[in-house]
Image (cartoon, rainbow, N blue to C red; front, side, top):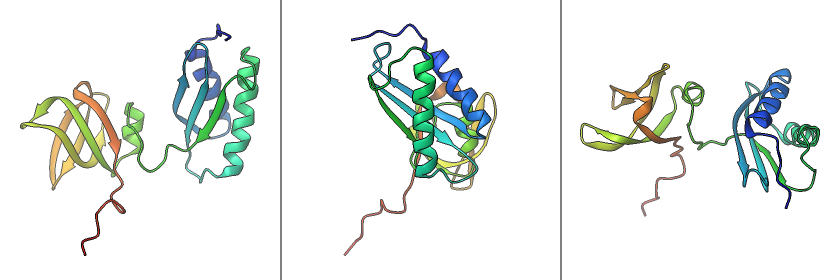
Length: 161
């Protein structure tokens, strides 16, 4: 199995640069089994709808970029997608993109005895986010967030019958 000398950061920068020229934004990049690389998952966001034409074109383009970085085509699986309705929030930018959305946040240190909070993102800054829970604003420092993801409840309620 081949081990690649290109860094994950270099791959990220190449993808980021290409996407910015396309007016798209890199949401997340997951390189599985680095440095041997078995799969590359690229999640993109845009102000416009991301359809199959865009993802298949980007799939080819990213494979070309990886080839230019010395990573043989066909040695890995390439996945290009939007992050989906329920997505992980890992960066300040992710929280900015999720303003007004319902999120579930797991904390390292409890706030008023709670380790898991669910509410709507009211605002985000460099240090913290404001979560609105039943009309009450709760300020959460980024360093206290263990994990966070957007919630989509429309189909989750069980039908009582």
